[in-house]
Length: 428
Ligand SMILES: [Fe+2]
Ligand SMILES: [Fe+2]
Ligand SMILES: [Fe+2]
Image (cartoon, rainbow, N blue to C red; front, side):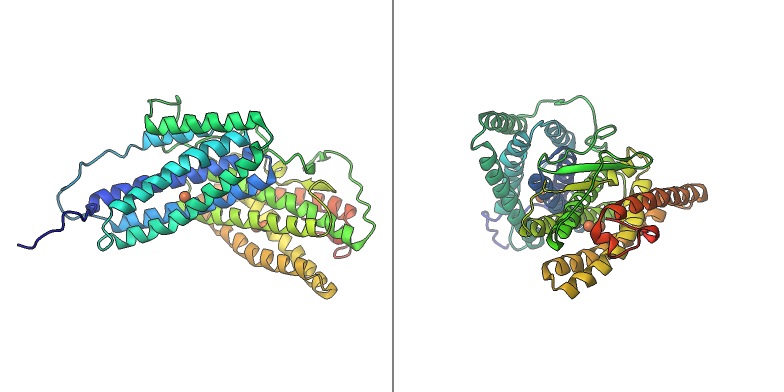
């Protein structure tokens, strides 16, 4: 008989599969929670970092899902008690967090309690796992733990800075950290009345995305025009570029917000599509962050110039997710690349390399985003009436967008030198 080393623990395949499904659910919900907070958080620094973490949590969910499909036991159950997936309890914790009302309470709840709890589950699995038989599982857990530790460190540093001079924020953060810690230690059932693990965490009908008070946003609504008169009067090439970048930061942030809203409100879309939309969302965060960095490098700040904001006004509370995607991926992005290419060439001739590299990467990313609109007919399915409705909607939105473009080109010198207002077809 072969002697067994009693100190080596190995999760049976069926148990490992169970863990992978639980972890995948927690990461997917984590992505949706952060995506919801992108909509409800004004502070641009937090809004962009929440978007990045949401994407990374989506990739963590994907790794766990892939591994779960590899872990199919062919043997009768042994060495562990089959457990029902207690996703309801976990789901209820996420549903409690969604109500954290302030940035400090969000940071305290997620980065002070839920993410550290999740990290401890991963650490415990790695400690108990067999490094030989469970190598693939431990390897992906160790990769994910690196990301989670970075998320927690960012959240705690951001919170420390936020509460340094604000006793109310400090109290809110601590209250929510303690509350979530308590829920995870001894979950009561039910924590909140409604919802099941397959329902959206939240819906935002009638709720506009929160905006950063440091920005001066001007909202353009189809049929109504701008929320206030704007009359840019830049006095130099630097100021022309500042005006352009101010609106780019705003519009890229809107693209992030719209994608996050879709990720939260449509959990039934195909997972592969959602993962790709999450990646698009992260790209939009990168674009906004890069444009903001150049804007500040040119001596301006977020509120120096009015920033035009329109994507979410064009979409409104449109319930058909495919119409939302048509506005973003076909109407806005499909035409903005036509504008970014000549911009990139113009700034290359001027030797403005920071702007050139930014547009170079944005253009490379946007080709992928436009290609994602291939999901629209896939999700619509073989339904000629629906496809006809979607095509008519696209035509209507392109008309509204053309009106908006004419208005914006009439206001912006950086656009006027690339386009004649009468012939303008795109503006961003
Ligand atoms: Fe994660
Ligand atoms: Fe973008
Ligand atoms: Fe994009």
